[in-house]
Every structure is written in C-alpha cells, then in structure tokens.
Length: 354
Image 1 (tube, rainbow, N blue to C red):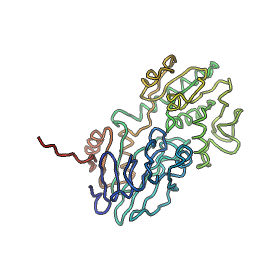
Image 2 (tube, rainbow, N blue to C red):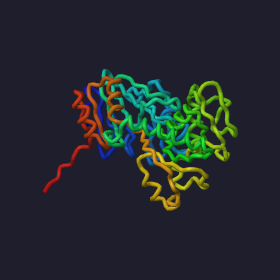
Image 3 (tube, rainbow, N blue to C red):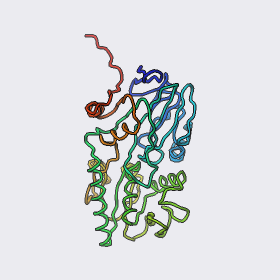
C-alpha cells in the first residue's frame, strides 16, 4: 500500500491498481468495486467488465454499450465531479481517442491524476486534452517513451500527407490501415487540412458519429456533413470532405486495423495500400492478408513520448510522479534528471526462500 501523501491510498497487486482498498480500480482486469476505463479501444477494454461497474465518459459509453450490452456502466460527464465513497472523482478529456479520459481523484487535502492514454498533439477531430493541478500524477505507460519522438510523428504525418496528395493527383485511391483509437482521428484531421477527400469503413464511421453526437462543436461535423454522406460535401470553413466508401472517386479510404486483422472486413477494397503504426509485422502474420503488397509504412504511434510526459508534469505541478508500465524506469530516470520527484510504481516483490 502506498500513501499518495497524506490521504489517498494506492495499491498495486497482481497487475491491478486500486484506490482506497478497492473502491476504485484503474484499468484493472479483476479488482475494484468500480473500474475506471481510460480508453474505449476494443483491444483495451476486452475482458475488463468482470461484473464490476465501469466508470467511463459519456463518449466512451456510447461506443462501448453496444459492444458490452451486459456491462454495468457508470457514465460520467467531463468536468463534473461525482462522489464515490470518501472520494471525489472527475473525468477530464485526454485527447487520445474518442471517450479517452484522465481520472482526477480528491480526498480531503490530497489530489491524484491518473493518466493512461493521452495525447496533447493538436487535432480538431477530438477534444483537446485538459489538465488540472494535482499533488500526485500516476502514469501508466504502454510503450517505452524513449522510443517515440514528437518530431518523428510530425514528420511521418507530413510524409503521409505528401504521399496521399501525390497519388490523388494521379487519380488513384489510397487505402490506409490505421488504429481506430486515436490514429485514425489524427489522420482525418491531417487530410482535412490538406483538403483530401476521406472515406471510412463502417467501424470507423460508428466511432466518428459517436464523437459527433458527444461533441457537436467539432469543426468537421454538422447536420449536413456526415461520414455516411453519399456525395462529397464542403461546408463553411475547413471541413472534412466525406466520400462514400463504395465510390470509385479518388480519395483516402481508412480501414480499422483491428477489424481487418480479425477478418471482419469481408471485402478488400481496391487501391494503393499503406500501413500505419510500429507493427508492420502484424499483417504478415495474418494469412489472408499476406498476399497484400503495402506501398509504404508510416510510423504513426500516438502514445505519449518523453516531451509530452514533461508537458503533462508542467501543466499539473505535482509534488510526486509515480510511473508504471513499459518504459517506467526510463521515464523515471528522465524526470529525475530534470529535478522531478519520480519513482517507479510496481507490485511488491515476493520474498523467495532458498
């Protein structure tokens, strides 16, 4: 058990992190009376129901409720604190993907901000990440942040834009395989800025519509502009030009990577295929996709790098930072060198008798 200063108690056991003796679990597999989900990504929430109440944002609830009809959800509006036991909790948008959230916890004079999936790279397709001061930050990392650099992500986006623009001028259609959570939204934002027509597979259409319903102010959507539009529409300002995915018109067609690998994309569209992400080997492991030739691969991975972690710390002014997950030691070393009180937050080691 770790005291987050004077009041908030954290426990890390069997890979699950809980607060206040299990009142709230943080992206846990089994523990906790109420399990907070920081992301609505299908590959991430799978198996996390476990008969517990799921604390999610309203945007995430719209996405997950159809996929988890038996789950007990506790939807929460961003920026509106609620009371759970002796804790006050508040969800804040984390800017990573539709419905992704920070969780801020207060108890008496202490506060904790839990961050698992976030991005403060600008895009008008998603709510911007919102930061609030906290005494303690708990970071859960899913990639080694030293391997990811914001400058390379920007360059990869620029390369993708140049690649698509060149092929569309030649009358071609580009098929982009992208992660549904986060990456596809950033790509749509890029293509919108370049005024490149966009088509989406059905899975991504559902995600975009869920985001639109929750965020009607998002610049790319209004009543007359929808991913389901059968003809291209331009509206006032820099709006996305949606194309019917069955059209032969030159455009960029986005396919959800997880759906494609699970063979839920029954018909493979025609076009010049490209892969996005750091996992190019995945398609070669899928026998039914092995015959496809990818013209290029763009290393787009929207996980926080060291500079984004520093920005989060600067925005929240914590007294201490706890880090768990892949690359935790690297992150702690980086923060410590900058004079930040940081430590690895790991399960207790079991004593071994010889």
